[in-house]
Length: 74
Image 1: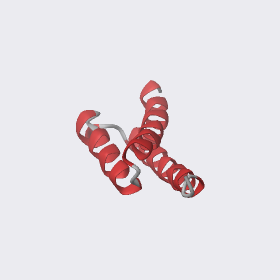
Image 2: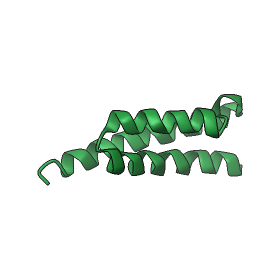
Image 3: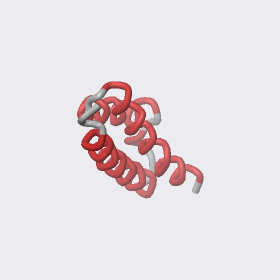
Image 4: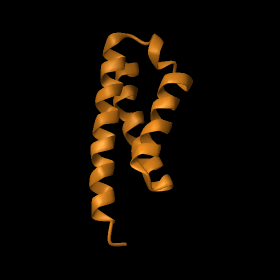
């Protein structure tokens, strides 16, 4: 249960953080995927954890698009 909760929270915030640091949504997506797959051993997790992580990354990507669109004039 804790793994699913962490899979819902961590990739979302990592995506937002790396988007703000790198100013690139694709770079942030790549870095987040690499961290989830290699550092958190994402490919050997259970199916609910993988699905929760995928949903979290997709939500983080969507939110990073909104943040970049909002801050485009800055």
